Length: 174
Image (cartoon, rainbow, N blue to C red; front, side, top):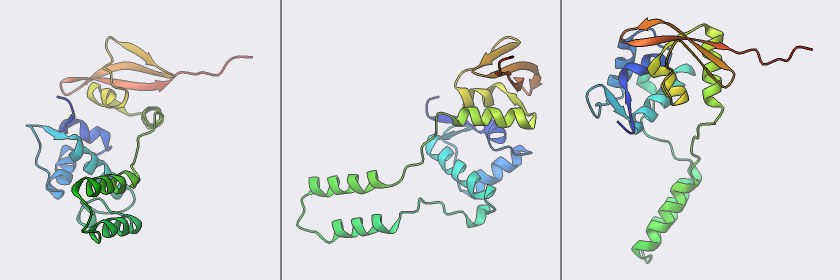
């Protein structure tokens, strides 16, 4: 299912102790899953922003559910509204310009390595679905390497295989 994420993977994604904590966040945001057990990429983005908000000391109740627009962007929108003589294509062009100027949070190519580093450091055991969310492929067999990380099969987590992540020593011996 393209553009959708299993709700069951969110507990591991956010490092929560229970599935109920995931559902508390979903319910607190008023999210209705797009399909049974799945959230859309937009809903996932909202949940990711909530997770950052909570990790910075915020609560679900005080989380702003809409994206905040910076004051200069509001001024540009006001300028467009103050020009009724503009034709529709000009207005659309201006809106695209304003939206494009908003800072977009982009995911760094190194984020997956940071997540694996954290899993290694914390000694987390991850299910196959969590590994897939990070590196975009499912480990198979008993052991596999990805970059400087090694995944060893470590039993099961529910219906999925569980994996212990460790870092491969990349220092050369003298």
